[in-house]
Amino acid sequence: METPAPPECMTCLGDAYRVSWMEDSETHNLHKETIKQQYEVVKARTAPPNDSNIGSHVMEYGNKTFKDDKLFLYQGFYPVKSSITNRPLLSPSLKGAINQRDVDILFMWKKYEQLNVGSEEKQRALTEVKETVLHRKHLDSSIDFIGKLVFGFEGPSVLEATKGPGQPLVDYWDCLKMMVRDFESRCGSLTQYGTKHMRAFTNICNNGVSETEKEASISACGSYNMGKWSPPVLGHSA
Image (tube, rainbow, N blue to C red; front, top):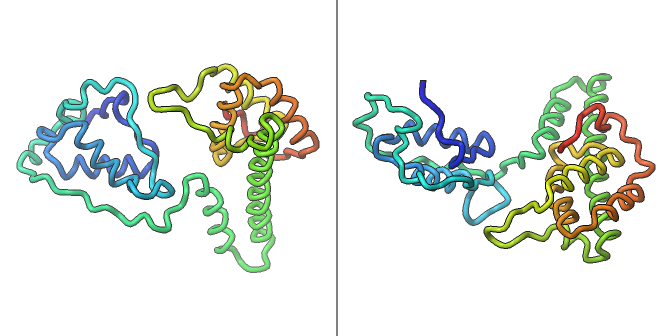
């Protein structure tokens, strides 16, 4: 059995990356290809350089001192492949690709389309889609509202601000965890979709206004009926 590549250097963020990684290994002589070469090839195939809205977000982190090591040291080597001439991977078309956060909605909608017209099950499926969309809109509007309460009308831009290269995204991990749980206890679970707002919570913590955010969460979601989106049902995101 082949051993996995070192996790310190590889970031398999999603099925698209994992599939491309395996396909690359199958079409190359692992005694010749390095970790760095495979990373660059798979990154280019998984995330088109000219369009950040499709594909998977790929990055490297941790100890990168062994990027020039040959892949066979970590993935093993199958002697039959010793005569392989490296072949470039075909880049699949990513047009029309679905954002990973929308997969659940797509699944529910496809399920709805396949059910019998007029059936109770079809009506329940449609209700589930509508409730999910409404909760997403609630999360988005709540975060926007909190940003404006905490930072004024420049709130949205402050919440989406990014740090410079090489700087840690999170300065206060305990604050981030506390804030996410506090928000979810009042506004409902973030769900996978809502995790896109983690940067907003991080920037609130980094700006030292976590206590103000608590009051803003109460104002934004004080009367919201969480129902099935309650943390005791779905758990906390942090």
